[in-house]
Length: 133
View 1 (cartoon, rainbow, N blue to C red):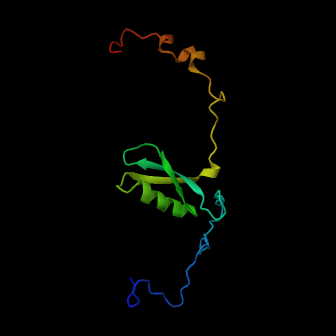
View 2: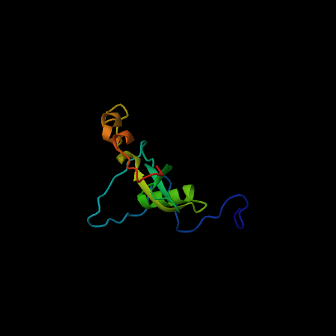
View 3: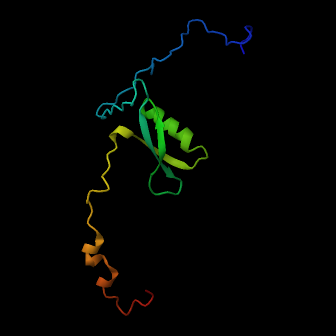
């Protein structure tokens, strides 16, 4: 493996490996941008990001999966490498899983359409001039 040392890699002078230290650079902050701290489940674990991809001919973004990453930029890169290898998508969104809030199925947020008869097609009279319907 190494140039003259047989089985091990050659060490570089002046370079110390960063083992378990996490990110070694500062993430720039944009003035006016909201900072979202996406915290992982385990100590030292990268947070989970939900990935949405818009296809070339698609009109909307579709949830395709999740990735672990330290920051949003890395999450987009990981999502690109994982979910758009064959150039399926033209746009990628990543959202911290901790910030996703959904309604519960048992909650009655939306009234059923049976209570609104004007939504039924029988509510309207079809004119005779419209023969193709």
